Picture 1 (cartoon, rainbow, N blue to C red):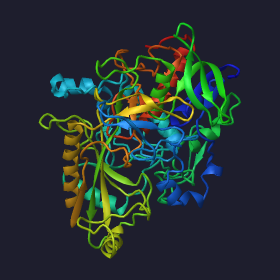
Picture 2: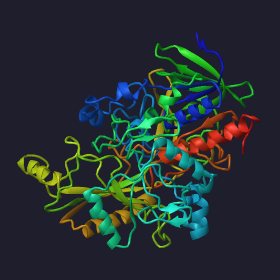
Picture 3: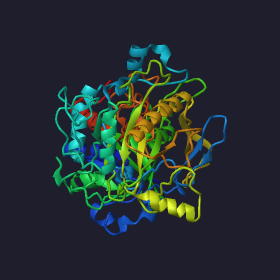
Picture 4: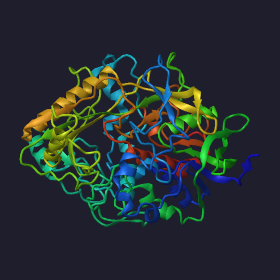
Length: 586
């Protein structure tokens, strides 16, 4: 028998960045809010303590903070002509579990999308013509402009204690920042983190080639800081444990370190962990959400009624819940019709390892954000008219912590094992440095999400099936930008450079990045988007979807800054418009 809970004003599925923002803002507005998290409760002081958090084996190798794939996973295939099989080990991406979600284990990079990113289809059409887009590409405008989102980017950066250097302050280009960024209303909350030795070499080489290097904006606080919610962050200690680790110093921002300490004291908020949501329930007319059904830790089915429902689960899981709930028309790649599962996208990574003589880069002393990058080849910051592809990415010198198990750079023609390999590892550890290319991925008709017809989770519900592969557009883009990175490496004085290019089919078994997007895309047309510009379902007016799942395609940046901005943008419209007159906002 289903356990029936008392109705509340708001129920939120997922308590990562997006869900925590919505919960805090609406509980502060006086609404009763229940947050449902499929994983366990994580607190800064009890869960992320030293010395446990500095152990590379459980966290960086065995992904201790990730989702339990024995209970829930996805199936994968490169094309619809193949049979999808379950993902049984963490590979290409690292879906989080527990309060804070994947935001606990990120590196901290906090970018704003370029203004042209948010109107990509219109921008490409107007600059190059509609025929410039390859057949099968399904990119679209987001439905919101950079100017509209700017105050919400600013708010998220203030909450996260983001460290950086403005490049465009109220329309005036600033020395040392990113000259390509949209206009900012003020400086970052904190100064940029210190530049590494490798970053200095990169910046000098990039400038010599006519490019504009700047420090990566990062939500690793460069100094002690108190955010607008009254939560204090510590100073980043450059300890080398960011990606795949939680921050023991409360310096790297996550929902756990910046929002939940204030949220959990609210009398109008209740957190329920180990709550595995399986569907959103609708009224008889199927026009209004009435409740959410979840499985609790004891295996019992629970129904939580609410006036407002938010899906804020990890990336593709929002699409799965929509499909399991029968809300919105499922996407059909054969006809191109339907919206739930449409426009899934990833990111396109490549890199180069530069080897030097008589250098000591000290790779172990680092933070996730100790990077110096250029944006000259990101977005549409460069002329694509004769290049035959759309999109771009940033190139940077990244020192993110030289872990002894996972970081072993060796030059070309090094033996795969034995004394020769050991000698090369010892010689290269201090004197090699990486140049990373972090690039966009467009959406295509053949890349999508749906329910797997064969495989089910531990509770008997169909797994989500991911069909995805890179296209010629991404390969051309990656080759072009990787070549630019090689030129910078040579200008840095490297004696040898090993390019690691984006080649072949997408491989889900090798880690790349946890930047999955799409599946419930936002937009202005209900025939091509699942939610409107305020992240409100086109079909059910009291259902909102927040997170990277609403991106209609992916940019050259990681999604977190835009996820936060969109969450604040949507909740502002709800507080100031929807609550006064419930109904469709667009």
